[in-house]
Length: 333
Ligand code: SF4
Image 1 (cartoon, helix red, strand yellow):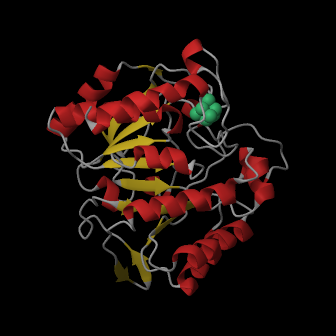
Image 2 (cartoon, protein in one colour):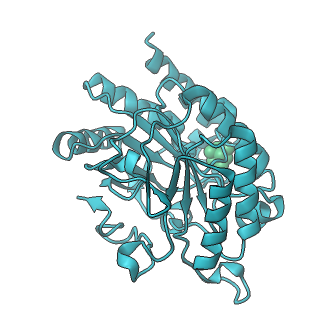
Image 3 (cartoon, helix red, strand yellow):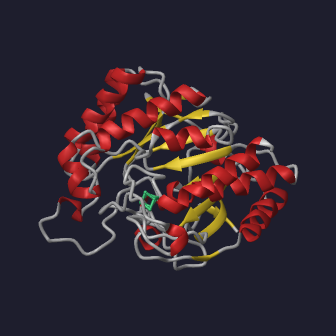
């Protein structure tokens, strides 16, 4: 039996006693039992588009073929995509519909890759999608856009079809991970997962240049990458210490060549207690402190999203998945 066919069949059996992610619920999703992610075995997807809002080596000029799955195995309090990750927005898609949509984006928009966003709970389906695309002769890189909270066993299962890993590294502080994502073991799990990703694919092939003392990457200099790992960190309001610890931890484990994307796009998206630290955006001072630490550590491949430089410098950036175009300015439809 061909490798991808075998892989697909063996992965689908995992829905029966699901341990695809570190929650390891053990539920039988084929019998309509739901685990922490809240998803069964039918593909539940909010949107599939050519997305221009990823880092330049991922989006390139034509966009990344993003598949935004509904449901999530982490369900963070701070999630910017909470409409789809926790409120069930999206609809059921057949495998054929997904493959047809991605094939159309490839043919008409020239997407540089297929980008599965928080796909942990649908990993078997991602294998099935890629297998069918390859059967059609479409062989663009596969991006796994991850929360960072992955099982090494699951990463090994998708290794034959994964080309690029785009994992978050959200927390070094266990108390913060428990409070915001119900995962006190986040740092331990994420370090192990990131090590596996780097071991499989190495660091992302990126191009950078220095501009006005700021390390930046531009579309002009960054053709779409084909393989490797780029770690992302979202700076949170009032949590600078966590960010500093994350960067130090990544430096100690992987050194300064690890490509890192520092993001500052956090916007409060839901009703939170008045005294919650998540009720505001990140300040420029907070961002600057984290950015300076990254520079002092000497990270060489640094992608930076400055506060207030998103969505035209005036409005905070926030997707709305109930709209026809959830990412105004960042999507080709
Ligand atoms: S994918 Fe969902 S059901 Fe499976 S272990 Fe994770 S949270 Fe539980």
